Image 1 (tube, rainbow over the protein chains, first blue to last red):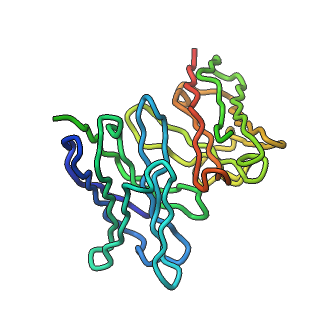
Image 2: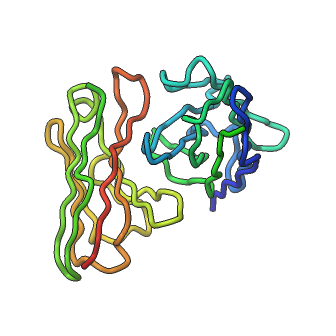
Amino acid sequence: QVQLQQSGPGLVKPSQTLSLTCAISGDSVFSNSAGWNWIRQSPSRGLEWLGRTLYRSKWYNDYALSVKSRITINPDTSKNQFSLQLNSVTPEDTAVYYCARDIGFDFDYWGQGTLVTVSS
Amino acid sequence: QSVLTQPPSASGTPGQRVTISCSGSSSNLGSHTVNWYQQLPGTAPRLLIYNNNQRPSGVPDRFSGSKSGTSGSLAISGLQSEDEAGYYCAAWDDSLNGMLFGGGTKLTVL
């Protein structure tokens, strides 16, 4: 059974960097069939896919156009986890952030969610 | 236009059959399959239907999906109180070059 456990701060100041981590159990970040995603949800923007990292003989990233200039998703192979960094945050980035596994963009396992508030 | 449109709300009584629509365009549903997610209050979304009409293991056969052209549909038969939740469609969008979610439909079981 795949489990995704999220960690990271719930409060970030405007203009700073939002950082979250998702620890994987029951699968490997090196999986050649899965992608490892970040998705957020807010009342104003609904569910919004942010991007993913995936391994297919080498590492690839896909990012949503809306955040492409500010986002980095990295694997941490030593800990079997992956991370999200979102730079230059504003209050509009306030949301519940989820990590999720995809198989062919079917998001079949999700983390528990982390409410991140951007406020001074 | 890169948007998936769902009705904001739907309702039914126990035992009834309800359907939820998802309207898209050529850049998303017209070219790609639709998935459906169920979100119970306070929890993460759960994959309910993938590849238009496939159910993951553990999803009751009361849930079914279909797609025609640029529209998708989720049907729930034999409605139960535990089905009260938010339902979201999703599909790849070529214009965005990314995954797109519908705005969600809140289902109330009366």
